[in-house]
Length: 82
Image 1 (tube, rainbow, N blue to C red):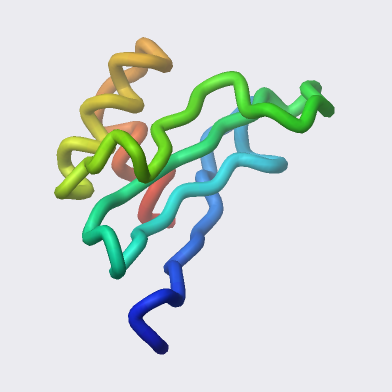
Image 2 (cartoon, rainbow, N blue to C red):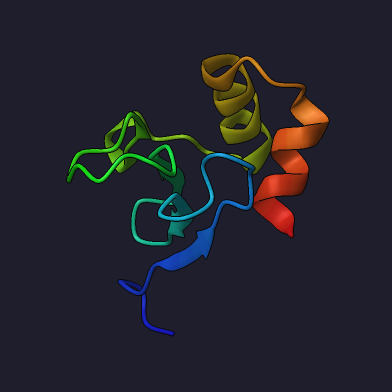
């Protein structure tokens, strides 16, 4: 992996799993996420925390997502790690 390679993973959350992704940008040292509802076929995600937000930890990304989705933090954490 080079310094510009990003780690990209699926978000396994019911209703959001078909297209939603999250990852880590090693160059900027931050996490990001882009979420689409399963029935949504638009190019732009419904919820997005881009690298411009400079989210330094996965814990903060989890808290931001659980707030945006109005879901328990544990459920969001499971969706990011399974």
